[in-house]
Image (cartoon, rainbow, N blue to C red; front, side, top):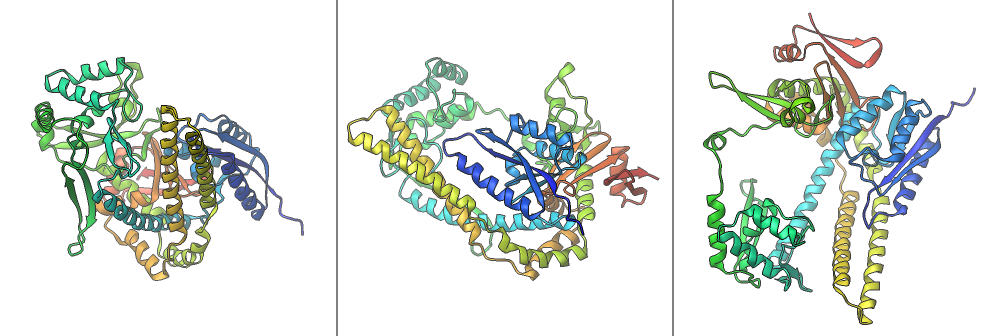
Length: 538
């Protein structure tokens, strides 16, 4: 019997810009992908590697070359270490995976194994749900550590407010250079000078914010409302009430524990002027808060812009809510997008019901529970931990070199800034190492708990907003939409099964039919493409 023909494959690797990104990351990605290819009887013919480029953009030279070669039919499979190496942009993931499928090519993630078929979609969702649980558990532990630091009035992370520096104990002290600028800002604002003019003046003098950016109204408001400038340390603590199990917050405040930069009188006057400047109309105050479940997941096929929540009011005073292309709302004339708006409630229910009916069944739930129990052990991965530890060692080495320079009498403002940046980088790496270790040490789920979890998706009321939200957040990655079709990209790494093209002849009529129970809809397979569902009115 002849051997099975080997598949032609390509490897794509990428790492982002940043001081902690090194070639060792590519080596690890390549090693795992080549091993996965060998196990699947595939031969990687070529490597495509982009260095120091963010995955948020598709304008990556090697990535674009890879897609050109895929369209030429050179490869059956493209291997990536994880999907975020391929792209971090939801629209791009859906778009390019769909193009690969049409070219007869699959995208496979070496470290995110998911079985093919609809059960794979749910498996990934369950594993992500479990990871989210462990992540929250870790977050609680980190929160306890932050709370202890807050009780000692220490900086607990993030950007140090403009006008302050940290001492060796991570406590705030006035910056001799920037503290006078803080006082100037308050005094000019209290005297009535417009915020725009203050920002313009600071920017013209070359003064930058703590994020090394130009001043604007937002950055100015953060300064004018921060009680640290009068010596008050505040910390907003989030916790779960042990009796009611409700999420609650507690504002912890310690007065006179920081060296003040301005007087309390000046701070109060600035706050009074900010309050007077708030202009919130009664209409916006009384407007009900409406949740758009597909925000961040829905994109326009014509201009690639996201669909955003929109509303209108009829002559009789009734409110209507829609999804409208952002370029249709914000631009005018020839630049405006001509795409159609879609009714919010109908679209959300349609997507939730189609997703549930398309990928979930009783047989899948039973089979899936067994598979997850056996697959959980395969999710462990220490490559990321080893990579982070190596990056931490490199940062520590750089810190040691700066400390030696300081001991030899070399100390400048640049040296100080560089040392602080490296120490911050070290703290971030230590946190990320703890996160990865926590994931690997997480306990395994039982078969019964997995079945219980999955039945929530199957048995809920499809008209219930909470149930729709649960389905959309768990299963939907991206939707590309126009008047004739929608491409649904599930949260699933297999290119052949993770994407559905739904052709729609009349979008609004189809949504009406779904709301009426689907009695007037004919659902058939497209004979030319089994992955496309055709919805037509009878």
